[in-house]
Length: 474
Image (cartoon, rainbow, N blue to C red; front, top):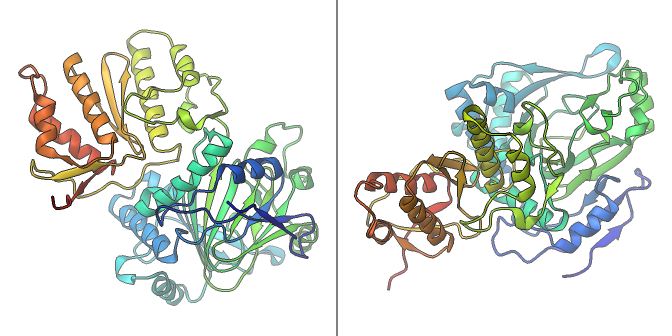
């Protein structure tokens, strides 16, 4: 592996550096894994310290404009079908207005969204969608933000997970859950203005030049709109309220800037205030945020003392994996009894799904064609393990890629399920009929139905932990 090269910063950005990691060898064109040595250097120089640019770190596998368009289309179609609160929160559409008070641009958040707003399959491409919106909006600038973007495109999920796995090997597993968010549009400024996040940010530039203005935390923390004597402000989200053009100009005069082109990754710590600045044409980026605090699903009730991060080897590795000891010890403090047991069971299941999904904010999209017959051949992922984890009350959770099903089997059936999971984790081709025959061999009558066996196997296909294959000719 060639060493990383530290380049001088842009003349407009004194004090900033650009990292040029040597491209890793890649087994698959969706792999965005950087070596452990890179991440150790990154932690020493930049993580929670200062912004930087990763210049063209990958020769292939980087998200493409078409993939991002497909993810937005998938999310839009689901939103139009369901109009669920979660999707409405994940997918947001902003209109930019240039005639704001005192010359400061502002944005409107549109709600609810209709077919006119979202990408449609018949658009066919990002360019056609942009052209349709320009006609409909009369040229007004717009922006779309899609959170949990990995849940709407399988290849995008693979890309983000591979990038994170390299990070996990070097830095440990941040527990809050990585959240890839798509930013798409011809807007000039970030729709929510100058702000800071509660996560460290890696911005993958997919299309268009990107310019980000940044300020260290202390630079803006004393503004009058900020709370006084709040020790938590550095770790949480906050926004700056500009008083007018003069205020904006004065702030930009004190800013530093990151500039990047397609294929680059811009990085900055959670403590930095920032805003996207005007660039011409369509802008597409994927903002991947990470944080070392407890995940959202632990926030109900008294907050346990969860570890800040896990080791890479504490993620699922095989079918006999169990929750990390640090997590189990906190769950055990919840006591005993019916309601407590049910709560402990559900929280344990959340942790299992969370960790089999690579500690990301959501699972990949489900496979829609899950039909299996006894004549089919299947293969387990082999790289990302299925797990069978006991739950309180005699339940067994089978989980893969952030999804799961819960069973309450007899001890004999539980051992067969553990065998099935282990066999699929080998990554070798398996004949469904042979799997079924081995599963039920000498199993007591009525212990588990063949329909239930096939249903469990189809669940695994639906999660994309198992896929149907065409075996090579013997």
